[in-house]
Image (cartoon, rainbow, N blue to C red):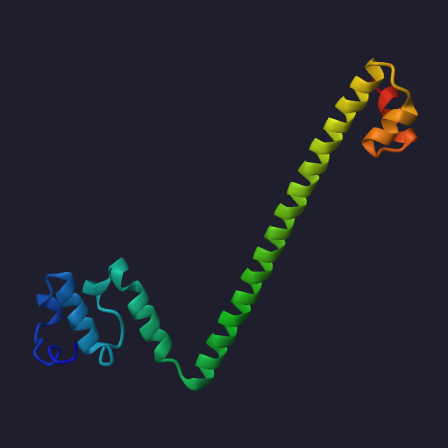
Length: 137
């Protein structure tokens, strides 16, 4: 790639294609005090952002790196909490669905005159829980 950069002689005003703009950027990056207006396109955002970061002094680079690590920690924590909330929501939904199925089963057993002790044995509910469900029917 470097072999053609010395041959690239266009000025900022002569840039027409994206290739021209990339060549100009790569050849003049170190000399440019700031991003030229002609290169203010989304495709160059990351290039010029990284160039800015690479120009930081050692102390500023350490602070920048530390802030990136802290940001990553926050994002990781948020993702962990979000996943935990999803898991708890799924578990709660499963319990509610299971509870609804148990109520329906108790109602059907009661409809066929099964006694509370038998229903409790079939559902793994206590006799008190079965009685509460029947009382609410």
